Image (cartoon, rainbow, N blue to C red; front, side):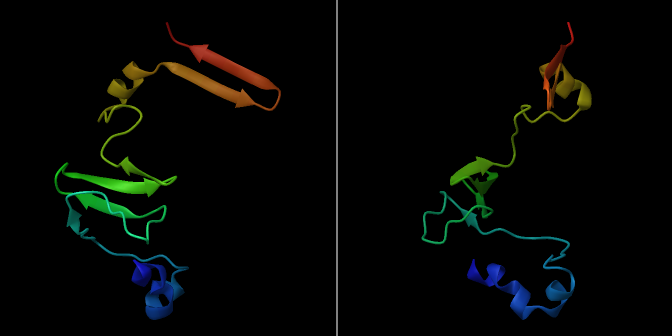
Length: 100
C-alpha cells in the first residue's frame, strides 16, 4: 500500500502526468474477507473472492462496487422506472418535480 502512495517519487512518468498513473489493466489480490490491517484508508480497493465482488473503502466502511443506489440497472429505462423524481435545490428554496 505504501508503494502506491509513494509512486510519484519512483516513477518519472507519473510525476510528469500530475500524479496520474495510466495503465491498461490492474489486478487486485483476492481475499476471502475484508482487510483489517493498520493501513486501512479511504480509497483502498480489494477483491473479495468469497463474494466475488470488488469493494472500496469509503468513509471508514467497505462499499460494494458492483451495486449502486439504483439497484445495479443496465439501461436508462430501467433506472428511470425506479425513480421518476427530479429534485432541484436552489439558493432560495427547493423545487420538486414528480412524474405521475
